[in-house]
Amino acid sequence: MKRLINNSGRRLLIPLQHPEFLNKKWGWQRQVVRTTELHPRTGAVGLIEKRRGFPGTLTLLADAIINNLPDSIASVPEVKNLIRRGLIRLEQYVEQVVKPATPPKESIQAPRLPNGKRKKEDTQ
Image 1: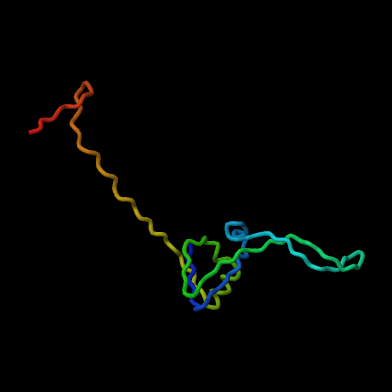
Image 2: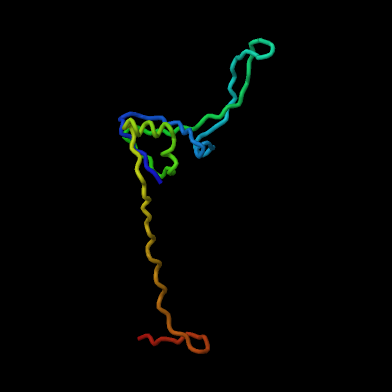
């Protein structure tokens, strides 16, 4: 896992132009775009509708740190550009695993007799 640290002192919007990030989890969406274009056969200008995919963006606030990013974040072109310019830092992030407390020990029970019954203890 990787960690991104913003050194720039201002908010950064990073478009996630990488095959691993082209899914809905990372904000990628498909929209209908309307444009006016010249028809190649008739020469008439008309309205054309095309479906186009748009990548999601990663927002880094000023002096913010984002943890738990996949290793492929380093291959996003905009991240490479910002690292080269010194605006962000990319570090290896090691998640600290907290071990659960040891389970409670079973209460001490009287030993079993050969017939499967428990031996009664004398209480005084």
